Image 1 (cartoon, rainbow, N blue to C red):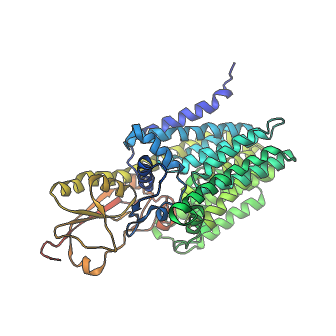
Image 2: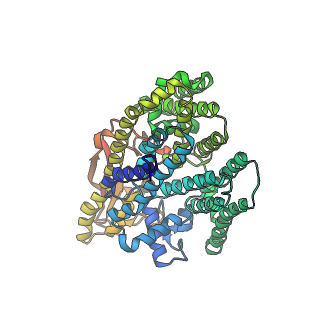
Image 3: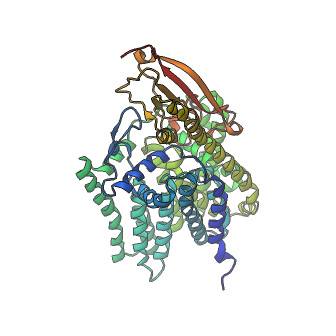
Length: 535
């Protein structure tokens, strides 16, 4: 007969799905549009996923140059597209199982590593980084699902007589790597843990060759299609120049603190962290205080979130030191490997790249707190910490959905009206805005062929990517018809391109993942080409 503890993974999964249900109607946002466009191509030509041109920045280019992730997420979108038909509710419902599976897998792992598994699990699920990411159809939550499955399978394989589970771990790692290339890091992580835990070799370890083999096969296929090895090209983009701003290590700390939020409660158990951990957290806060290039509007958030990130790193380090075993090694490599990638290797810091780090950080912190009476008392009061974290995550998800809806509403309203008048409609700005504008029949503005017919409309989403100014000769021929501002939900904004305050999806747009007290979720500029001008 199952005990209450046996039902814990199912309860966590159902609660996560229930919390996300109100967001299944969310408009497509950020890179959702890119994954959906690729899925459409896959549905039509399954063996030629990137064989089309796409204007995602300046001018139409081959999709191979735009889409630098492996295609597994879009293959899934193409599979569910037969019944979802790109309708937001059904597509988001198709992604709910990934978030629910993450919840169940987190609980199953936490039960193996913590005496009290609920605090670490709920802290990870309530974190804004996870909750907001789970409202998209991008590849980040599917990657985390496969990652967690690989870690759990490796833990099972480390038990006596269960080495064959390494094949399940290898299959999960291959799926992770074909979802996002960062999934390749799961292979050395699982290998190091298994060898350190078991102190023996096994023929089943050869299973992990499947992961690099799968990526290599995809890379060789991509070379026959586009002339270059796609995984290497993706790595070259990740190693490209970083956007200007504060040091990326500090930005990573701010995004770690803002992506979790709950670490600020660790101040109540500061003495349990140890002297050196506290010194490290204080050093992060001091460095944040002296950092330049932080907009005055978010300097307070910057300092608080950097402190939260520093406290989380300190708590994780203290937890690893308190219980120096194979599991602490696994979690430390998992956490700090992700931090190195997101903060030093990847082309920008964002919550999507940091997403795999929050669960091991929570586990390490919980394991450390379990080692002291003061820490246990804090764990007993954990619901009082997680409730405000969850409330903030819900508000941030609602604000993000509001910004996404602004693009959908503009396209269905003003752009559709212009098209019904028989006008040519072009747009500047991408992400979900591009998806909805193209669905109405508008075309992305081509900066290399910038001619506009007299009377055409040029619609610009200012809080968006690649919103470069048009060339001066054409700019002189444009007149502003309207400037529409969509208010931000409760003053919360996760992407603030015009003012450079917030960049949940890209720290190049702001040094903190969300900003408070903002007035506009998006601003749309409608311009008209001078009808008197003849080309």
